[in-house]
Length: 401
Image (cartoon, rainbow, N blue to C red; front, side, top):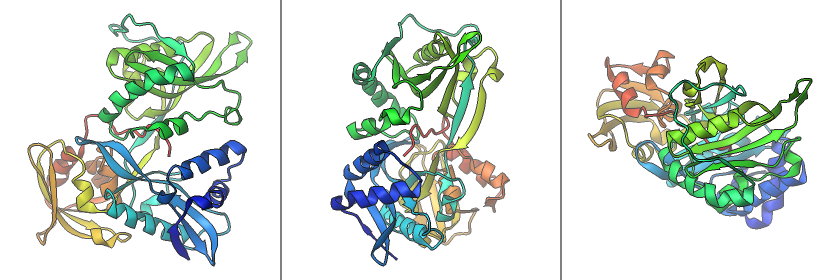
């Protein structure tokens, strides 16, 4: 098998293989995947067996918000698939090895959104962020004392809303760990809304305030007592707590609607803390962002840390062996890190997947130690590292890629 870059002339071959790999169908699916490829064909690779394309993958660069250091360019692993009948022959492994070698020469850090939870840990990716698939009942009451402000929420269609919401997103994204900044092509992809995808829902609607917005859609659902239309939220962005509460109040009270479903919410979504009865909201946590340190010292230096720490880490990395060894991590009073090889005795032992899981500050090293995935050699070291890696809020993967 051979992995090589693809060219623009191979767009149709790329799309056919990718769509076959996840059993997709329909003209809109082919159009979307082809457009993504043609936005930067130099960022995509194919794996060939005797000249036949059997798998594909992409690793473009996106800018995402990291803890402390804000927006940073990272390698965005996407569009990875091997066609049925060619799996479990090493094709995915060869493709991932090629992509991680590319990531090593780029930012040193790779992120992906996994279609299956059991695939990518063997390649050194760690589960770094969770998403919250939540339901909030229609009409649920807020606790006393919540300020909603006096601004009126405007309900708009896409052409009116986009010029208003993009600047809001641009203000908020650099403050939310895990969010990716969006260029025109990213917005087009994120809000792509062909009729064949809607499954009875309306086109996207936009609830807009000066400092926040929500993107949602509605599907008719009639009961004997009247309408209880399904209301699905795609995204809710607010630059301040008052706008956040006002948008949720608007969605919860929307006429003729039933419960609010938000399957891409943050794992620490604050709306539960607004409710008079926090149990009224149902929550289901699922994985979202997976992180891989392709170049360990480069990646660990990309972010800032919440507390000073100095520790020797012994890292095992079978898939990217250049990361294996003992590393001294030194974080100063400003949260800046330096990482150097050392021969000193290790204070903590862990694998590449564990470092990836902890990188965004959501998965705690102390929790990984409790699960026997981090071994402490000097008492107290895991707690110190856990505090240094932790963030003010949970990381949040705001979009699938």
